[in-house]
Image (cartoon, rainbow, N blue to C red):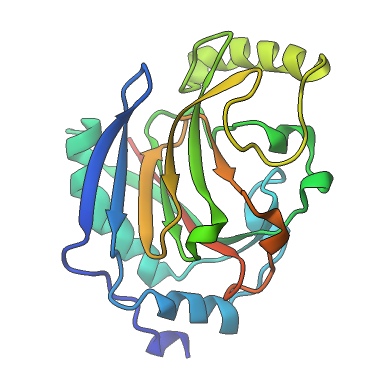
Length: 238
């Protein structure tokens, strides 16, 4: 039963902070986040109802399902102090959190063009992505990118129009490759990468250009025990 799942967070996960690219955006990585992380995987197997609609966005290349509120609330609460310190959020408060369990399932040949380039989750600079890996190391990781022509690494509201204009022109021209992105491309330069590790949590500003790195797409599965299972939580301050 869901109520019997042990979703307690670890008391002292190991955390590091680095800065990405020229803009110096902070990137937090925590290892050993939960006391029993496999319990969340088993919950996904036994209780979650994955669907394309549950993915939260039409461009997510897979399936999604609601994440347990107990886990989401605990994680958002535990990260409040580190977020305030690292991102300079004094005087602000958490005003909302959305979440889902996610499985990447789409085959490279079936991807839409916008799924083959780095993306952002929102232009809101006060929203933060908490990405929790619940899968094995063979599933790659998450890459972060700089758009070569504009030099943008974050896409905020004041940059969105310019970025969309240039990206549209680039995607309409020659040289745009299909499939999952794997590193530097004609139009994007990778500024960093976090590799998948089971029970690793990655925290970054949601307007940071990023992409899942999928080196072995043939291993993708809709089985949470076998596939690229993550928990995706988006916390907003204001």
